[in-house]
Amino acid sequence: MIKKRISVTHFLCLMAFCSIAQTNNNSVPKAGKKLNKPGASLQPAEQKAAKKPKLVVGIVIDQMRWDYLYRFNELYSANGFKRMLGQGFSCENTLIPYMPTYTAPGHTCVYTGSVPAIHGIVGNNWFDKTANANVYCTDDSTVKTVGTTSTAGKMSPRNMWTTTITDELRLSNNFKSKVIGIALKDRGAILPAGHSANAAYWYDNGKWITSSYYMNELPAWVNEVNARDLPARYMSKDWNTLLPIDKYDLSSADDQPYETAIRGEKTVTFPHKTSLIAVEKYEAFKYTPYASTYTFEFAKTAIANEKLGAGKVTDFLAISISSTDYIGHSFGPNSIEAEDAYLRLDKDIADFLHHLDVTLGKGNYLAFLTADHGVAHIPGFLAEHKIPGGTVNDAEISRELNQVIEEKNGIKKAVLSIQNYQVYLNTDEINKQQKEVKEIAKTVIGILKKKPYIVNAVETEGLAAASLPEPQKKMFSNGYNPQRSGDILFTFKPGYFDGGSKGTTHGLWNPYDAHIPLLFFGWSVRQGKTNRETYMTDIAATIAAMLQIQMPNGSVGKVIPEVISN
Image (tube, rainbow, N blue to C red):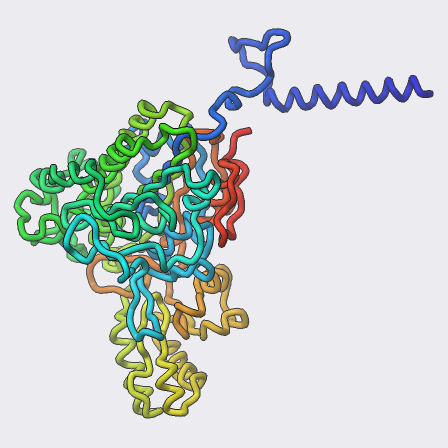
């Protein structure tokens, strides 16, 4: 009996080993493929990659809708977005899990794996009742500008409550990793770089600057870049379309009354005579695709001078491309300007990936590309095609609410602010007048619900019990922070937003604002895609798993296992 049992056991073990070997080989070798010689390792090819990447590069494209990956795909080059899609891994159904969908919360969410309810960055701006003033997300009066004499450098990440994946990388090896953030926008550089970053650089009037939070003077190499005055050189060239303009048949005709002109220009048509802009040259520069090229070129210079990826530990470079947002707000997603900006961005990405191949080596760097939010179509464009939409003026709503409450309850300025699609009540004054905050809130909600473009309005403290559909309820809850959010939130019909008659914006729960691209590329990334639902919060958790480090301390994201090569 014992002999028979051993024989069966051996047989089962042999069968299990064969099954494992077949799984590791994945499939029968194709004709012409070299077979492993007897005794040769059966480890898959990707196991030969470096134990850790030399550099992680995060690329956040400000205002990039997911559909841009495919809408302009036939016109993209082979080595930009197509290379990342073909050789990397695409999470096709990645969503933002909170509202409002703005730049600062978006960048913070990507790198913290958290939501505004936890990380504290509830918008680009919010109202601070204790100070009775608006707060900008990266404001810091305790620091000084480094690089210019302006106040644009009085910024830091101190308003962010949690760590980032970049912080956790530094913590994982006792701060041996270098971390640098780069963007035209201060919030696009500062928040991704985290609290412990070596540096964050942003754009101010033609120069790269930083703050005394990071250093007391700019490195010599940054001064050298600034001395070259590259924005002026770029602006000396007019912005014309990359391709003949008749090739842009995926966009509206060039001259549209609902588009906004670039600073210093009087028309909204090609060619944009940027060479003629004088007084507002450096501000107008941000509204051209040349600003994307400028950002990537600065990133290359940072890699070389800071020796990123040249040490024994993994470094991290966080890049945000801001010009796409400036262009999108002005011209809208169906404009020739937006299409041309993405065709040019595609070439910039191809060039940057090639630079990483040459300097670090293929397979030695890990990159991801995503967006901080999407964007809505311009209501004027929607109206042309009989699609519902429109704009709302928050200031007018605020005036109406204050007038009604004063007449009904005798309280002046009961509404302090309306922003982030929320109403901030003057609770101190309401209590001082011995009125019930709940009654005032009820009045506000009643007025808001009568607006034809508003679907619902609820008190933020009562979100858990509010009658709201999914995914709105989840997104509103994730975006609500008791210390920084308003007292009442309201929801619009699809296609409506706070804004003027020209241009467009974002910030709402709808898919056009909340559905974003997510591509992983390079070191230990499997080739393929998934259409299952993933979230912006999952990015940091996935990078943490790949690097075998702790996820950020407020992270609520989950690892996307399909991304990771065995």
